[in-house]
Amino acid sequence: MEVVVLVIHLFIALAMIAVILLQRSEGGGLGIGGGGGGAGGLFSARGTANVLTKTTALLAAAFFVTSITLTLLAKNASGPASILEGAPATTAPGTPAPLDPLAPLESAPAAQPATQPAPAPAETPAAADPAATPPAGEPATP
Image (cartoon, rainbow, N blue to C red; front, top):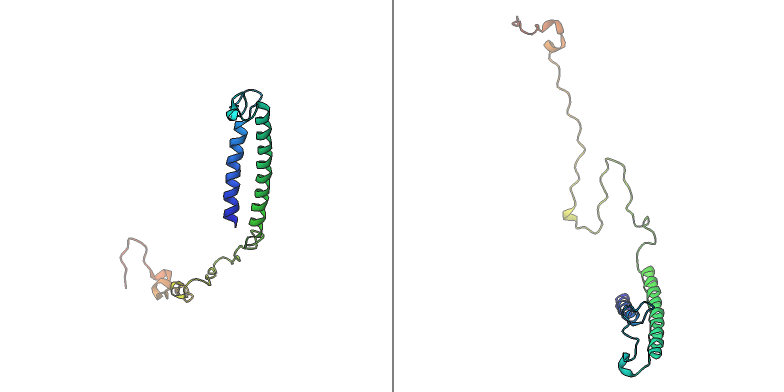
């Protein structure tokens, strides 16, 4: 339905542009519709102007109607009324993002166990006693 109204809306807009350009303006403009021989002598200059004015008014009214119709169709389309309603829930830093419920289970990342920091290496007795270590440049004596 929305596509049909949109196509009609575009045709009305193009027709309205053409009719407006056909009208005679004060400064001459394109002025194709006015003049002695315009429209094959069927209308006088005044009759042609009246027809183009009425056609412009009719197309403008139809343009407004299709604009309002498109607005109402877009408003009634499914979706959240606010951009905040469709926003995903925020998570605290360091927590994994929630999984997509529609994603296949095979593509979901496997849960990793929590890793503990590696224990510090045990100190050797020589490193614990600063007097037992020789200064730099001297040979070590047992």
